[in-house]
Structures are given as C-alpha cells and as structure tokens.
Image 1 (cartoon, helix red, strand yellow):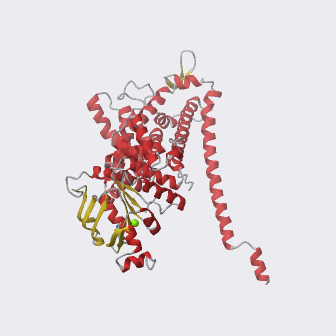
Image 2: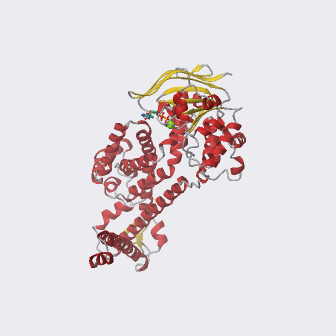
Image 3: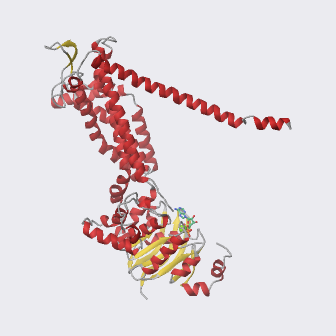
Length: 313
Length: 251
Ligand SMILES: Nc1ncnc2c1ncn2[C@@H]1O[C@H](COP(=O)(O)OP(=O)(O)O)[C@@H](O)[C@H]1O
Ligand SMILES: [Mg+2]
C-alpha cells in the first residue's frame, strides 16, 4: 500500500526523462541565444565606434569612394569611403546569382522531372560533393585557371569582378540547385498527373505548373545563394585583386567588403582608427546577412500561405 | 445508340502481373456508365487506359484495342495531348492547384493558348455553372482554390475538366472522399450534364451506380463479369457472382 502511494506521489521515470530532456534543450537554446546576441552586440558596438568616437559621418562612409583609413585628406578628415567595396560586393553577388539561377533551375528540373532514380541520385551526390569543397580550393582554381584566362582574353591583370563572379557562380550553383530541387520535389506528384490529364504537355506542366508552384522555394534558394556569395571571403579575395578602389569595369581590380576585411584585419591594431573602420565594414556585412535572412523568411512565408490547405470540409 | 468508345480484348500488365484480362466494353454516347466491383478488380486500371494515363506508370503493358469515335487511341497517329483533351479525368481526391478558383478553371484553357480575358471569363463562368459551383463562388473567383470545402473543391476540379470541353469524362470514385450531401450534389451535376458529355464513373457505392447510371459494368478479378443496362443488372443479374456482390456477400 505504502509502496503504491510512494510511486504515485513521485514523478515517473518518463516524466523525469522528459524534464531532463527539456532542461538540456532549453539550456542549449539559451547558449545559442546568448552567443548570437553577443556577436551582434560586439560587431554593432565596434562597428559604430568609428561614427561616435571618431565622428565620421555615415554619409561619407556610405557614399565616398576613397578608402584609406590610415591617412587624412586635405581637410584633415580620414578617408573611409566604403562605396567601392559595397558596389563590388553587390556586383559579384548579383551577377553570380543571375548567372547561376538558370543553370540551377535547369539542373534541378532535369533531376526532378527527367532523370531516372539512379541519375538523380548520382547528380545529387555530385552536388553534395561540390557544396563540401572548401572555398580555398575554389579560390585556388580561380587563381590558376580563371584569372589567367581572363587576362588572356581581356588583357589587364585578370583580377576583378568578372573573376570573382565566375568563382562565386561555381560556388553557389550547387547551393541554389539543391534547394531548388527540394522545392520542386515538394510539388505534389498528383499535380503533374492532373496537369497531364488536362492535355498539358510535359513542358507545359513544367513551366505553367511546377515552376509556378515552386516559385517561393526557388526564390528562397536564390536568396540563400546570394547570401553565400555576399559573405564568401577567401575565394573572392584570391581573385578580385584587393584594391579598395571603385571598379572601372568587370576586369579591373577591386575589393569586396569581405576581401577588404580579411586582407586588412591582420594589419591593424585593435582600438586604432584603421581597425575601427574595418569593424564598420563588418557591420555592413552583418546587416546584409540579417537582411538576407529576413527576405528568406518573408518569401518562405508567402509560399506557405499560398500552398496551405484550408480545407473547411 | 451510337458508341463513343469501343474496347476489345484490353489487357494490362504491371510488370509480369496481369491486372485486367481481355476486357470488351463499349460506351454509349451521352450516357452515364458505372464501373463497379470489389477493390483491386481493375476498375481504375481499365479507366486509365481510356485516356492513356497508364502511360505515365513505369513498366505497364497494355494490349488490345480501344477506339474513340472509331479511331484507335494506341495508334502512332493518335496525338495523346488531344486524346486527353477529348477524354478528361476527375480523380478520387479533389486536387485543386494552389491558385485562385479562376486560375484553376483557366488552366486547361490557357494550355490551348486562350489568352483573351473576355473569352476566358465566358468559358470559366460556363464551366463553373455546369459544375453547379458558380452561384457559390462568383463573388470570390480570386480566392485560393483551397479555401473551398472538399465538395466544392471536387466540383472545381470537375469545372476545370469541363472547361476544356471534352467529349468523355472519366471519374475515378469522385465522391468517395466526400460527405453524403456533397456527393449528392455531384451526382445531380453529372445527371444534369448527360446531354452534353459522356460520363464513365468508377464507384464503390452501389446506390450511387443505381441512382445515376444508365449502364453498369461489374468487374471481378480483372475480368468484366457482367455488363448491362443498370436496371437489369441490379434487378435481374445474369450471373450469380453479380447478384452475390450486389447482395453484399463479398467485396
Ligand atoms: N501502379 C501499379 N503498379 C502495380 N500494380 C498495380 C498498380 N495499380 C494497380 N495495381 C494492381 O492492379 C490490380 C487492379 O488495381 P486497380 O485497377 O487499382 O483496381 P480497382 O480500381 O478496381 O480497385 C490490383 O491488383 C493492384 O494491386
Ligand atoms: Mg481504384
């Protein structure tokens, strides 16, 4: 009798496991949350130092085109115009995404609509392999193949936005492709049947139905690809030329936010003005990646609303 | 009475497994023909032959001959896209596309290159009236198709098929996922459209077959066990197995 009472009053083994499990996951979530918040706080506070402590105008930072944090201009003001890096970063990101998207959609369509199971599996593993290759390898290939080729065709050094775009194109292609494949696979199989039964050709089914239903997913894939391109440092640094000047054309040396950061951060001392200026570049990067994230969420939600089954039956 | 579809010695194999065996079955124009029989007896398989949807399944072999208005649908001259426009299909589950009601019905029309809004409007209203959905959705044509109830969704799917103006409409258990009231609405719709279309409907529901069909084909184990006018088949079947099935002795 007493035994039963005791057992009933005590939490069961399962309940205890449950609360331990809950504790562990909340604990981890807290750690992650603290990490994220401190990273954001750290970069923000460092990134803003230049504006508050060194009284640099935000408009000068965003709109001026000379980047030379070590020296002062004729008015005695430091030269921290980040526009060249911002322009270059956006250029390589947008160009590589424009280049990669049609390829990614074509490969994804081939994998989901045309290839047999074995072919699709094979391509899938090729793509996974490509995603896993470290960026230094891409940079190295860019340096030893792409740059000389551009030099040969267009003259000049071969370094620049074009080389950066081509390297990033190869790097983000697998990312965009595999996410696009996911979104096309998520289009229910019976939609295809219905479409064909209405007298659609396979090609009509693809572009009037599958691509249309998959659009939010494909947009998400492109944004993920762009986020990766925007944030990529090493491979770009190896082929872009690393001159913090306004790019004159696609084959003139330039520098992205990331390449400027990686080249500069080792050469400055924490707390100096030149160092603060680099933190401001990092802040721009952070803001951009938060923006990409928000975009992904907005686009993803739109798709979810559209495909939701509001079955009132 | 003229025949719109005639089929002779139709057999279908999935791999080496025979699903239906030497079916001979003709369909009268502007009639409703019901295909009944226990599940697994090959009704869906046979139905999918009529618009060649079996072509989409791997490893299927179809033999025999099926003629639509006298033309062999398996001949190399047969344009399969046109065949499916002439012989439309409604599936068991309502499957609207995740588009607006308007765009759902417009889908088949746009496939045919119809772009002009005036023509689309007219054809869409006509199809929605035919499927008896117009009054319920005329003010919300641009709402998502999923915002409708299950029965309404199925009538939307029927409208989507009718908009293409097929001659024959195949329906594979179109009401089995619906409540009785929605089912009855769809039955009424089919009966009211008999003069414009030829319907071939697979159904599990024998009351449904007896209520709406003119002819009934009883499938058993991949064979056509009995085929006659619906009244005759239900009241006075020739075969003992048919009467056993109708009396619920198996199935
Ligand atoms: N896609 C398929 N692959 C293999 N076998 C199938 C397939 N579809 C149906 N079958 C088989 O064919 C037979 C007839 O099935 P079906 O035509 O679906 O019957 P019914 O519609 O009368 O229930 C069944 O034995 C079923 O298992
Ligand atoms: Mg069936």
